[in-house]
Length: 594
Image: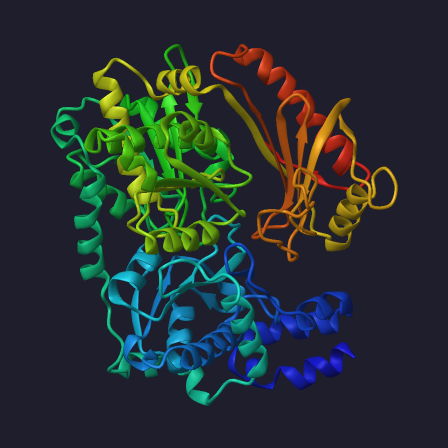
């Protein structure tokens, strides 16, 4: 069956791409039928960050054929949805990824997408959502796998509001893709056609200029920045971000940050890091920290390859470095954005139309801010697409979002773009650090001040790797039937569980009708436990990688408890959550290497 499917489906693709044909031929010759079945009998679907998969041969992989098929489906849907689609066009962006053995390249994939039938504009991945809104495009396509390993790639779609697509658009686009899998014509493979197309433009210079101009709205202390003695180091992790971070710093009155020379230039192999994800912390920041020591720089920043995530480390007073978690950095940025907003809006009544947003697996620190300061706070499902679309809805009713974040070091300061943005966040962090330095405070000291005022919020976030979907299904089925059929666990680490929320099934024991307030998300697994001691713990599957993530947080009231005792209790719950519910050894899960 696999071999006949292989023969029937691959005529177009094999003739056009000898590298992917060779991959399939090799699998057939080796008799690897399970691998062939995996590649040829299933398709990608939209997760928390669009379509994402390894590069290579197969319909559940990123390759030139699946890019063509995805673009045809998107194009078909946009023609149905927008009467003026032909005049609005689509923005296509890309980063530096590629894979020689499958003939995959993020220089060729955007060209392949162009070749379908788009009236298109071209630019680097960084400004994608901003450009969609600024140019009034119908949609945007971003070819990137962000922070994923070098073997992966992705196809992310933005709607006309600049936010990533959500339901029903994602489901309708997938339906359109499946309706027309055959490439429309031979011209879909003609890369030279794009160069001859009069409809194609390259607005990068214009969009960059507009973005940098608007970015100044987030700069509150330019003169102070000019006098700041702090030195900053920045790494772009072999991605596209460094030149834009330099420009952003200069717009804020700072000299450019010191680049990590080994990581400054684009490199699809990400040669100097074991993975291009700055969220992994000190283990992947080694070159940046060494350079900072040599240059006597006090703060290190790193953006991932498509520059939407930001990691920050600060030199400690004694020795070593404090690498801030996403939740800690969000506490600082949330404080900073509201501090400056309040300076410009002294009337307390103005807070009624101000919002901060966070994904539900992120720290509740913004909720604590809102409770005391009087502005609005909302949670969304994981993934910035939910934040971006909620921002759009709030704007339509005259409300504004001044800060939003997800714990995986994704931040949005202001509302320039409905997407996380490492470039603007880097400049904002630099200005915050400069201001605090003028008050003889470090970032870490101010974080402690925030906790003193709003209550300690101590969190742990990590993951286990599981590449076997049936194992993941078995783990979560067991949790849902832990104490008998349909009965969730009653304790974790000996501490009573008082509430359970299961977004996958729509169940929430804390609600009178037992229904989750957050939208049901059946395409992924996510269960949250609230414990009697105040710890909130969540297990969920990653939308971009073969991981089960776990999140725990202890939220204390202002003035309550010492941080060390909170840490110890949280650690106990975290260990129990993983060992009792995930059973890593029994299920052959790979624990995160630090």
